[in-house]
Image (cartoon, rainbow, N blue to C red; front, side, top):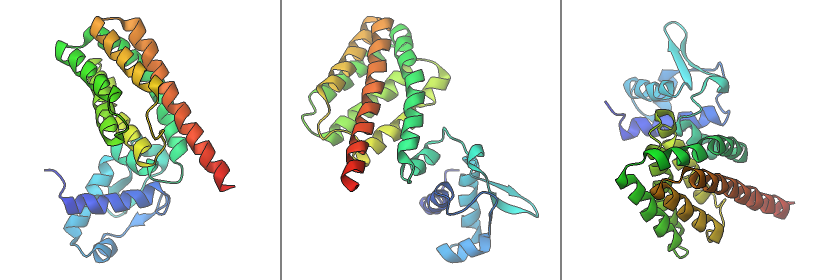
Length: 236
């Protein structure tokens, strides 16, 4: 059974408190107090706790209660966890960690996609890259097509572990947009490289697809560091 919107809302609030350090590792959550705080029954609180448990943020044991787990035990690949980390004070550190992961995964995924993608996936990549190229300053449209491009690419790798990273890449792309860590206008290089990857995958050219995808990830991280650096300098 899927969590209700109320359960998800409470889990989101508690998850943010844990990930931001407001609730520290080892701290025990009191269900009755949480029920009073949120104005809900203990049943609803328990369901929210189950959501947190599914991401390894807490553990629940009889006679001990619900205990907050240390960050080393969190599910680092959970989009739920990542979303709250990207909303927190150490956003750049998390973006850097994910960028390092992407550098190791997405170029290889692009090469595999060139070898394994279905005809529909090859067409989807070309369509997404083309739409990004003509977005004309519409960042919302650009983001939608960018997410579709990278999700399709990972799925087209036909590697189950790479496919499972789709949610994480989506969260990172969305966070860059939401926190304005990308240029006001996507660069010509970024648009060109997405088209290059799409065409290489469509043509079955694994080498070109891998190289161009590596350039995409490097260019994206350079953009984040440049913008954040300018902001830091302006605040001094």
